[in-house]
Length: 426
Image (cartoon, rainbow, N blue to C red; front, side):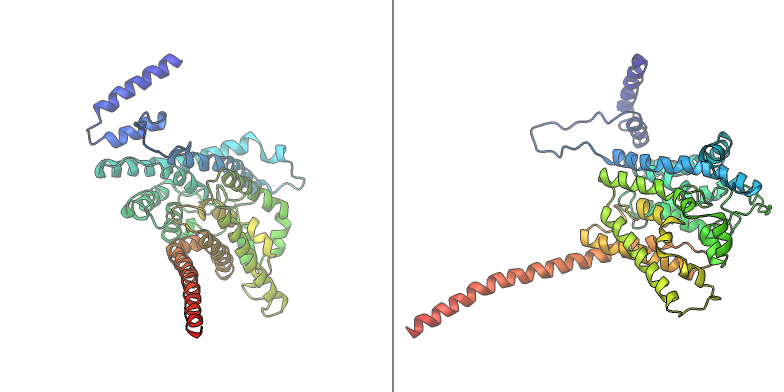
C-alpha cells in the first residue's frame, strides 16, 4: 500500500513540473496539495515564520467542528419525517426513536446531495476563476461548502442550491478578489439569495420536514412547524405540548439541517476557541447581546405595555434565555459571526460587533413574525459595518495615545518654565 502511495506521489510530482507553466497549473496544484502537503520549503538562513497552521489546516479544523452537526442533522431529518407521520413518541428513547438506521438512511439520502451540490458547484467556480485569473486555488470555500447545506431546509431543490451557490461565490466573493477579500460572509450571502429569491421554499411550516412538500410544490399532510413558527403564530400551548426545553437544547426539533442541536454547537464552539480558530470575544458578546434584547422584551411584557392579542406577544414573552436554544442563533454566533475575514479585527471592535449581532438577531426575530429568524440578516448587516467599527476603535486608540503623548510633553515644559521663573526671582 505504501509503495502505491509513493508511486502516485512521484507521478503527481512529475506531472506538477510538466504543468508548471501551463494555465492549468493552479487547478493541478490544488489537487496536489489536497492529496499531499506542499513540497516547497524555504531556503537560506533568513528569518521565517514557523508555525504548524496554514489556511487548509484552519479550514479543516472548522470542518471537524461542523461534522457532528452534519451527522446529527441526518438523524434528525429522518426522525422529524417519521414523527410527523406517526406522531412524536410520548416516552422518547434516544436509541429506539432517534439513533436508528431508518432515520440515518433517510437523512443521508436527503442531506448528502445538498453537500455534494454545494461543494461541486462552488469548487468548480473556484477552479474556473483560478485558471482564468492565473492564481492558486485557495481553501476558503472548504468551510462555506459545508456551512451552506447546514443552514437550509432539508428539502431545498438541488437546482435552487446550485444557482444560489454560483451567485454567492461569484457575486459575494470572487468579484471582491477571492478568499480574504470579501466583505460579506459567502455562506450567508447564499442563504440570503435563497430566502429572497425563493421565499416559499425557505419559510413557512412545510419546508423544515422532509416530505412535507414534494418537488412540484404540492403540500402533503405533513407539517413541520418550528418552535419560532409556533411562537410567531401565537400557538404557544401547542408548541409546549410538542417540544420541551430538553428537545430544544439537544436538537430534537424541526429546523435547518445542522442548526437544531445547541449542545453540539456549544461543543463545536468550545473546540474552535481552544484551537484558537474562532474569537471567544465575539461569541460571548453575541450571547450577551441576545440576552439583553430578550430581557428588554420580557420587561416590556411584564410592564403590561403590550396586549396579549398582539402578534408580537408570544415572541416577546418567550423567556429571554430560550432564544439561544431555538432557531439558528447559536449556529450563526459560533460558525458565521466569528468569520475572521468579514468580522471585526480589533479586540474592542469584536465586543461591539458581537453584541450588536446578538441584539439585532432577537430584535429582527420578534418584529418579523412572517420569518421569525434574523440571525443571518443581523450578521450580514454587521459584516458591512465591521470595518467602520474597527475604524472608530482605532481612531479612539490614536486619540488616547496622542493625549498621553501631549501630557508627557507638557509636564517637562511646565517644570522648565517654573525653574526659569525661580531663577529670575533669585
